[in-house]
Length: 111
Length: 465
Image 1 (cartoon, rainbow over the protein chains, first blue to last red):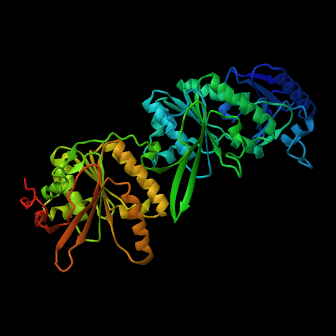
Image 2: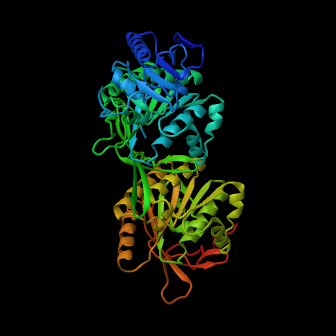
Image 3: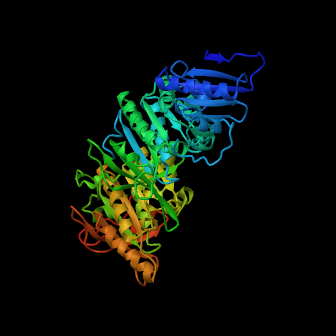
């Protein structure tokens, strides 16, 4: 089974369920997870859950969420599903991608 | 056509505009691999869902679902929706590799199709990463010795919109779909094939219920083995005019004449005689249905339906305008390939219109050439008709076609004598033949000659066995 990382806090169901798809424990994968945890702690403290899925171990799981790139972060909850690819190094863009910040003056091309 | 197929263990790019048959081409490659060569494969679709794909090919007679169920083919549907994706920071397409690897493993795949990989460019913003990853992907496939077909959308000036031809350097095939005179023609061209000789011409092909059929040009090699054997015309008096022996085996015969001069009947006698000898015959009738054809032949005492029942004769009736000239020749070619006849009748050639004289000429050269390489004796009829410009074009075609033929027979009505016809052998390569016109009548017992010119006056009876 995929490894789950729950945050500290109450035992009620989380509003935010995030999946991070990686392929092996590369430096990029580690950076993405680190960046994600920082952002979540700052903005979603106590309300989130992160699942890390290593596609090298579970290749068949890539199909369900239509993953082609790694790392890919998938917001399973709240709906609708969102995908953010890359090492999540730009916190602003991650927040926009997660709908935590309005999409203002954001150009799509380039990070 | 590519002298042996696509390069094994390497990638082939199939490029073309929308609706040109790329997907079908790729699918056929995969299905044939799975069914005929024990090479299972993976179809990676970036545009159509597996369900759509199955439905689309079912209309062409493929049971894709069964091949999927029996693990001969795996379908991997990859959808990348740009609107749902945010990009930040570095990434690679390792997940794509993992998916392909997983799919290939699931069927022990030897072949793969990526249709169309360019969709990724629509879904992902970073073209630089994408290009690098695609290059890696093609290398990765090569390393695994997977034979790949990659489709690409035609670009404005380039072969493919994203310049995929730069990455796939082994073999490139361009497909094209044109509409000329309201008739669609599909063409295929091998642009490049490293380490192999290939024809650079455009080859017409068509898509019908049996999938894709290509009409090869047989590279126009004039290496037919010339036969010295003869084959009866089915009419004793006509045989006599041909040095007492009949047509040369494997030769092409043109019978031209205006309406009602007995062209079809002469061809009918020929078919009948061939079947009598146990040879297979294939008749293309473009203006009559098979039922009409056999009935009309029956009215002059030629019973063709028994040969059809015996499986010796096949009558293929179709209006050529349905497809366009080249596509039509492609169907004929396939029918000939499947039935393997010794004798072919094309009746009439003149209805293979729908093109310029040059086009008609070029495609006929291919057909005649193909028949000769197969040592098939072929009779073509040609209707002389029309007035004004139409007649001029018709005449041009006749002149062009007759030069391709070994034997040319001209029929005409005898002036002033109702019901009588006259036959003249204008030429017959490689053999002696009667030089005078022969008078004949169409009777309920077949074509009957009045008298044989020259020394052969004895033979007035038609063959009646």
